Length: 240
Ligand SMILES: CCCCCc1ccc(-c2ccc(S(=O)(=O)CCO)cc2)cc1/C=C\c1ccccn1
Image (tube, rainbow, N blue to C red; front, side):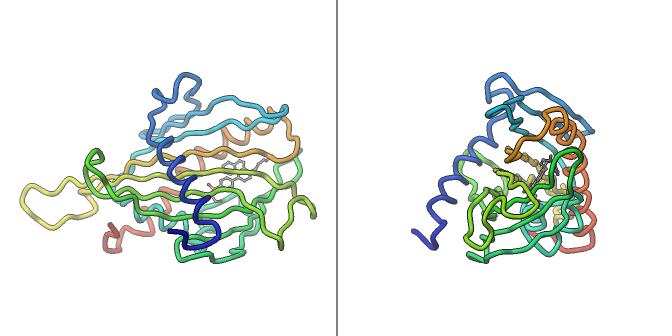
């Protein structure tokens, strides 16, 4: 049922991204190399180039106690929190509200020397994925971000090089109810997170610089973001 102009594209891409995110790094065939590990967080990348530009796909898996997938996706999707956790942001704006679960963002990121500054324009879609028989436990939640165009924000007209990205944050909440029948507390919930991203830098940037940025920034980003959500939710009632 087409609800707006982007619905078909979004629905198709969300289904494709979620099915890929659910594949383990083993099943994705060879090629995934573990490049960062910190406790439960494991980050993998594949080395890929298009026209000599590094576009290494990234897949991170993490397990975090005390928050739900709905909470993680809520804080990832909602614009009002983004400056709190996205450290590489210089500016961010909502260009268009397509629906209450679909926004178009324009962001400029801090310049990373010696490359030129980047900006991105993407739709962002938040969705609850009803659990079917083979995914036990509460529903899964996802946010998919995918580059798009908008007449008011043509690419590469200002100082920034437009990057192209597809990002999928997929979360599954696990509840282990207390034995004594007490109400469920945050000690009884765990969230399994898969974060997939492919960023095309848009214009040429040295492969060594890009790979160093990814190696440094992605682990920092996921740790900072999950800690932020734990901190924001710890005294609030659980959002399942
Ligand atoms: C030479 C520099 C090339 C590219 C710089 C860059 C720009 C943007 C982005 C980016 C990363 C994650 C998202 S999101 O997950 O959708 C959340 C919303 O912000 C959107 C954009 C990445 C990066 C490249 C590296 C990098 C990696 C993790 C964090 C920050 N920068």
